[in-house]
Length: 194
Image (cartoon, rainbow, N blue to C red; front, side, top):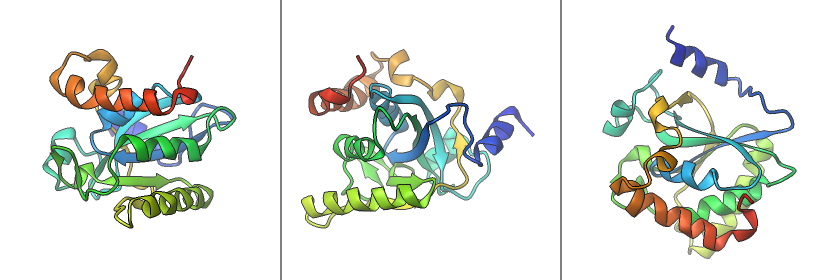
């Protein structure tokens, strides 16, 4: 078993080293965008880009980009509920991506870019349903966000971690990721890290 596969197998049980923390998995287009946003949020302890809810074990970025593994690009967000609630994280999620476009975010097209909330327990599912109902009402019933239990999660390759922070001048980062980070900062000033 590769180190990556061993690491992924250990995460299947949703264990992490942060005590008194919670974890939610979110897909909203390219994971570089969501990672860059959630790294700015007060109370977020870790953001890991990965692949979830597909059929292939240990998929590569290239396989997922072809759209034939069933996986969605996601971020696993580990957070301290005493500092930021799941509801607040989901409110950010629905502001920084378009939940009304099926298998698409802007020019990123394919099932790997679908909007999804991948929960780790029924309590999270109840909060997600409540927030989704509110957003769906505000969007005229057009929300296509998938709500499902997280399964077959695999961490993305190491070079995807902190991608925006490491490459802010790269074209995609400058023209796609940066505006989402700016939108978060404008809309959720009270949730920004100090």
